[in-house]
Image (cartoon, rainbow, N blue to C red; front, side, top):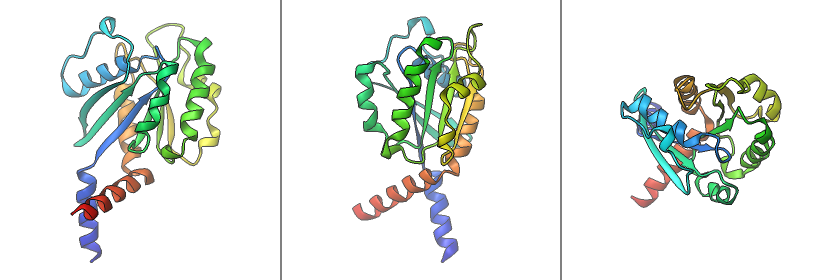
Length: 205
């Protein structure tokens, strides 16, 4: 009986699409990151950075990493658009939070926005990857410096990490995604979302 249940569980897990939110305040480089990510994993040339415009609404990117299907939801970061983020929380397996590491004057806005995101009950237990973006510029703060500023020690109950990246040249992106896939696979939140999907499917059968 156990082996049958375990086999069913593994089957359900293998069919899981991991939904990852890409959040952050405006001009942090979220869409540039998504386009570079798609280019690195799908061998499809993304939109050049100089042609990317501010996101109003949602951009979606789909890639496959180590036989896992990842769906990225890139949401606009302007103050008036942040209210729609909540609509996507419930289905998210994890969050990638992008910070413009070259704009320390906006760190406080990034910090307060991140804290509000992480307090939301619909994101309880979701792993968080904070990206110190724009490392291709000389004035960018390191991931360690950003980590000290954001001070997320109170998040010990969830998996989180800081990573230095450049959405412009691709530095650090693959390492970031490798970490994200690993933690999502063993996350209790993923177990909860799979169980919920399974019960919904059985109820509708």
